[in-house]
Length: 116
Length: 111
Image (cartoon, rainbow over all chains, first blue to last red; front, side, top):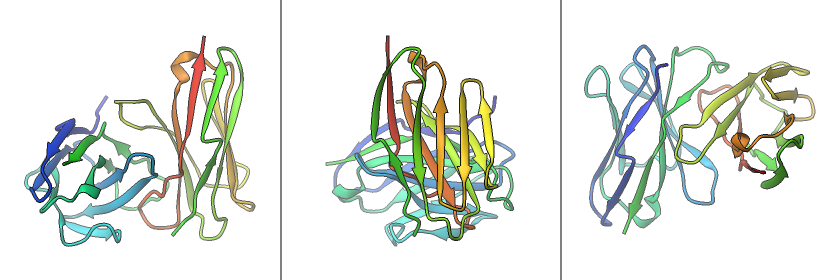
């Protein structure tokens, strides 16, 4: 069964460093997302991406964050200068089409990011 | 911003017990409700998507109901098994494409 994969599973970085989190969405999906969960808090939406551009982003997704689909398979989240408060589990998700709010979003297993 | 609450926050039951938990959300601007099951170190797994008031969905021993007028959904597990131990997340959508998650209910089924 097709699945969303994410690498790495864990990443430790120093404050101020750049990190890139990688995701491989399900191959025929068109709509991609990043969510995160800070420990003890709710899973929260960061950004959605369709047709090679951001379609929606949250207040969290400031200039320190960027997303890219560099080739036909990968979808990346870059944090330019990490802060302590960026420590969280980051989830990638994908969906088949662009049209329906009823459609299931399929999640990856997450990348646990720890900023020291 | 949708305010989504789930209760209880955590639950311990014995194997064979039936259990249920609640997801509350604003009834205005409601489009759909998603339920996910999330086991530690695994991907959140989609259980149900519901849209209509009175909707009921079932998947094995797990079922869910939806009341869009009063803004709640119940998830039921019949005859809980240890493999049901997970965090159950609900997420309504308000017309946009993003999911707004609740706090989750952490279920532990003990032998």
